[in-house]
Length: 545
Image (tube, rainbow, N blue to C red):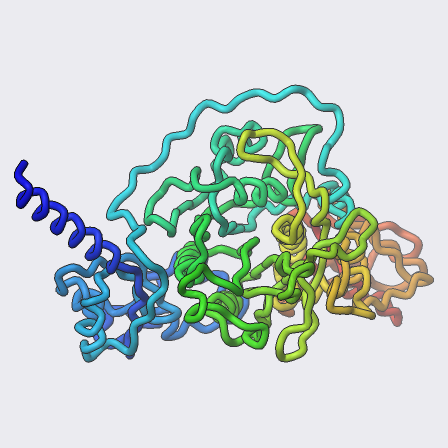
């Protein structure tokens, strides 16, 4: 090759490198959702039946926010040569693109475009990705004790499981940095054998392989769903799962907040009940920190992208459980987004003595709300690592999923609650509910206290007139004893919406007789039992597992 040819090649390579370096990721936001073929009267065209039912159950209206982004607007971007369109956000009415920065003025000039936001440098997204295959799972050595019993029992998980509340019927999403090893670890065999993973996606690279990048998600997931009999039992081993990669390890750019948005909308459309997020944002990678960084004043529940998205998710009836952050020992000190969101369970870390861990971020929010809401074990938390072996770790990252699993069991027990009522119930069942602070929040919740609180509310059953047992009901059988003689006995069982689900009446043998009621036709949940016998009346809150 001649010298001139070599110089020309160098110039060409330099030009290509320079051009490539200018191709970045941007969010393009539109002015409206005009010319959309969708409307709020036909939600089944863009939401699953499960997502629709969640809204109906919690009396949540489907609105314009639920409508997909206008396809015509998206096509107007695709027509610009050099623009690649990837994920869309219904909630923020925008799309993620990769494009050369020189094309941004052209995009901004489109009449339907409101604004364009730079979210990360360089290209990262694949045009397609194949599904990963699952390797054979290995066998572990026999262990004689449940290694994570402490962190579970601290929350009353042992009793929750004994009553049959293991998260069955609840759909829980975990958004994290990667799930390396999950697909071959024997601790997770059960979720694959029982097909518990209903959906999975990598929003970092636009693919279906979630088993890469990092094992942080593996460890987080283990506290909820790992199961190996007599060795390790997650807090909610029977939940159904959605697993999403949203954290772009090891860099930190605003794109990760939008990855969370895409994942949340994806999970919402499938019908998720709970989202666990053991991620937090305040500072971003240099040299873009000046443009992207947040301040403590921004932790006000209304400013950061991910906090706004979390509030929207909550408005759709989803319970969001998030880690408070591990900034307690550094100059920032305070909680990180999205822990500042209004309708959320943000979780701090305690040690085995239930004392605040120094690294655990504290509140209040910038607008002076108590944070975190609750706390759980975040020091020496027992986990499963990338290699399929038992390990331990510290951080609010591992405290949060413990609470997410607890919440799944509580919601299974009390399915008529909405997400806001569930948050309040968990707070009420926490160790310092009457004296919350900005280190532990309302304290460490305990399923036993939660159960006690809700089954004792509004009770007015004179024990010298009636006996109703067992409560919670066991084996679908309830017994009612009438102490005094009367002409009749009338029993109604009412659900929390006021609907009568069971009635029993008799005018025979009313005095000192035990009446056996078969309740197997009644779904699990909380009910009010009203009883009358002659002049005597009573009512009691009834739990049917």
